[in-house]
Image (cartoon, rainbow, N blue to C red):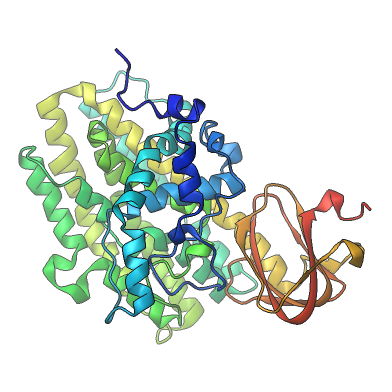
Length: 462
């Protein structure tokens, strides 16, 4: 008997899923956009055109996480999970919104994404099994000691994110770039937890519900954590529209959010989820206290609404105690020490994904600063005859470059951004050097522009 009734690996290898893949490549919700900031939660530009169905067969590992393929597949997986969330506009549907709403939740489109989910999950998460060891033996006492040691070490160190933001050449833009990277989760906060709630699984069920109720503002919408995050965005002059900055979500940010969808939707990973939940609840107070202080330092006390971060400093001290005392201990006492390695796996997965997300953010911040200050800008060696004429408004959607690349302007004017939401204008004869693994986008300003984009090693060839 096969290990799974739906063997997507075999279906991919035989080409049986090829028509479905072609349908997703042409699906309207995944179509291109011509604007930096999206105005609809139902439009999710996802560049599948250059990827074959076979691209799902090779796992994305830590060494290939910051790539175009990884970004596209992580967008696809994130969107597949997101179709379980309901998003409505803030006012009456326009005709276009109503059509887009039905396109995004159309049963065939939802089913197509769901059909590919097992393959996407294997591709995006397999490296966690390879990179994480949970060798024991484990006892409850060992687990509690391990948790305390991890937390003590974490809280002994100041936040590197806060240090980098405050030391940035543009601290306000650096802070906003970080906030964009937590938006995939915070705009619908605890929606993953909601996946873990249906059913009947004893006293811990009610304890988890207590945490969930807090996340949703105990039924008071202005206190709901996602509402507090929206207020933070608005106080900084950013759009609070759902996934308005989807273009700028880095692969690691999408992966971190999708991980919690994965472990809550796959019930055999329930104990892994409990471990992951504890780690997130445990580290939030220390980080949020520092980041709130950094935001006030950068924007001034009257220039930013920090309640989202301030609220979590207190409530998550309570939640981390609950996760340990009311979830982890009772579960081990009821089901035995054999479940402990699964909890440890969740803790270690959360730590690893958090480290990868920080590294991705720091490298993108380096590039943003280089573009902002002009250090990434140079003269171009690209011959005008090799460039492609582009009309006014032509949009090169933000994407990750697999190798060091050059974006060269041989005629006209082009604005280029890497996530600071403050494009730098390039004129004829100027280029931007894009490091490998970094995201960049461009838009043509005015008529008569010509662009060349390609690997830096080919820039001088004829």
